[in-house]
Amino acid sequence: MEKIQSAIAKARAQRDSQTEAPMRRQPLPEQAPAPAAQPNTQGSDAAWDALPTADVSLRHLRKERIVTLDRNREATEFDKLRTRMLQQMQANNWRRVAVTSPGPSSGKSTIALNLGFSLSRQSRSRTLILEMDLRRPSLRKICGLKTERDFIEVINGNAPFADHGLRLRPNLAIGAAQSPVMMPAELLQDAKLGAILDGIEATYDPTVMMFDMPPFQVGDDMMAFADKVDCVMIVAAAEKTKMPELDACEREIANVTNVLGIVLNKCRYGAAETSYEYYG
Image (cartoon, rainbow, N blue to C red; front, side, top):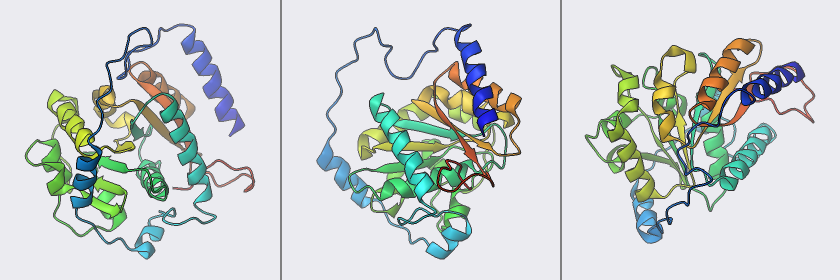
């Protein structure tokens, strides 16, 4: 763990000395931000409450390694990650975070859902988890959902989120895709999708919008979508993700948006009382 952190820090220092700060979705520091529109709280409350609910099985979720529905020992590390994520996002006035990984099978979807259920235990927050891994959607399977609702219809502009969103908890909702789509990167890059997401944000006024993305290496999907988020969380798998892959992923993402941080997942070692590794 220390070697990985040291290598990451060294690569960042070298890169920062050679490159300028990238463009971000939020206004640049020297620009005066536009006055923030006041959310229609009453309208967003009604829209949120109108979303249909889905029953999720605690037994099924635990089988899929989703452990944060209640406060317990297994949830503790995710709760720490949740708090650190919220602190950094609130300090920068960020709302949208994408979750990706350098390669496949790193547990990014599991991390996103565990964070979502952890956030749902904060009664004054609202969290939306939207599936953007259109090459291999997994949220429906992980959550054990038996529904014909398909977030792809929303992404394509064929239906509003109200027709295809589901609440898993009073303040946690997801948009899950049914099956893969053709040309996902082109779909994610389309300006129309940006307008759709802006509409969802305005209607439901979530505290956090989390996007489950494809792995960075499988194509240009993450880069195509990067201008639509405020920051990106990178999930690395212990003993699997190689440092050059991780560094390339962080470097390229940092050129177009903010890197929120790197989560080391699937780490089998470390002292339990000090560990910040996450099982996925």
